[in-house]
Image (cartoon, rainbow over all chains, first blue to last red; front, side, top):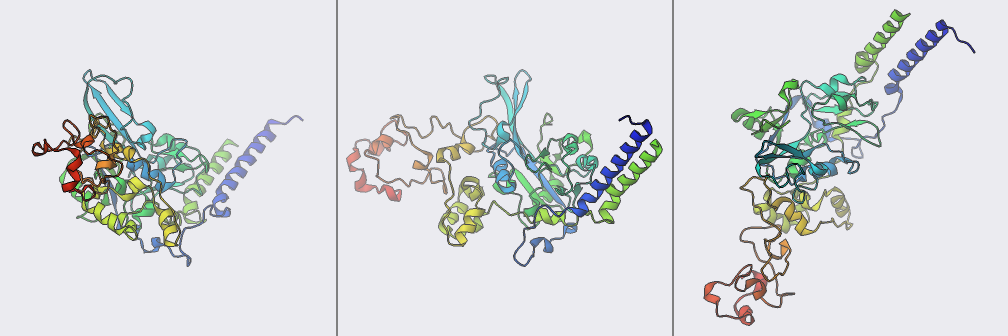
Length: 266
Length: 192
């Protein structure tokens, strides 16, 4: 059946309008996909939590990290991050510098098994290592949030206490945010087909506990706390010591800060 | 036509991007709560102490005080939930040597002041008797020198480890003594 150009354009316009309408109403009509975890009376500890009263910050001391990977492992267990495929909310990188100026970064399995049995990458193996250290990575909870800005459906948002979260009921799995994050912190959950990321263990910090990775770190390389509390470890570090952020040129203004960060770390 | 389409597109974008949040109910109001209500899987030593009081007390008093129980024993939520309801739920523990070496194998990248050993030679006496880390070290109180918890069981000859040139040689004053008489003075189970 021949179709005129006018009919074709009209059809397209209707389809586009219909699609947008369905998409807009989707969040209203569809039920919440995951039930709330609360006690029998429906009470949640979150009722007592006031996000406006907190200003969370994270400090990583790269000179303390021993690369045991307990943080990355604890995170997987805490947040049910899939073991396969290899996805990580947090991981540990090993930086190796050689005398001839070579810099090599490796992070086998995100460091969840540590580095004790991991040989150095081939390009630096057998060479004299002049400098080497570990760098733990996790979401920077940027103040200027690229992942939030690119989300076409507003699924990514920032809480009043500064944590960037993904509303799984709104996420359409388009992966724009995964492309937009300068730090590679995001991934697509293979089963749910929604974007996922480190939440600084929002379910723990809102209950007055530490993120799982902080609690798991045996050497205190990860510090977490509230900038509203001048006595907190992070407040004191930021007041007294030099810290830096990853990729400052991106203008993201991260909440995760690093102590003694080598200039080569990206 | 194009203008109409662009207009509709812009209008719908306004609806989805801003009105959706405030007017038609597509808010994030309940979503932080959804995240906040996720179960806490990794537990602190306080929870462990409910049943394992003595072990927790020892661990938190010594060099491994900063090591959370779950770091070696795994996330304990299910274990604790089941235990509280009176059920047994043993936590799987990886081989002790793997656990210890995860942190204590010598690596260029590790801070130099962190205790590190070469697992191939450390604790391996010249006699070739292989030991596991926990033969000498109590993982809950690893201390240095290690607190000996070993018994005579399975050890026929004290001098395998305590002979000359071995892992823990006898002091010079003991040079003329033989293994047979060790237990006349020493009680290995007591670490004396």
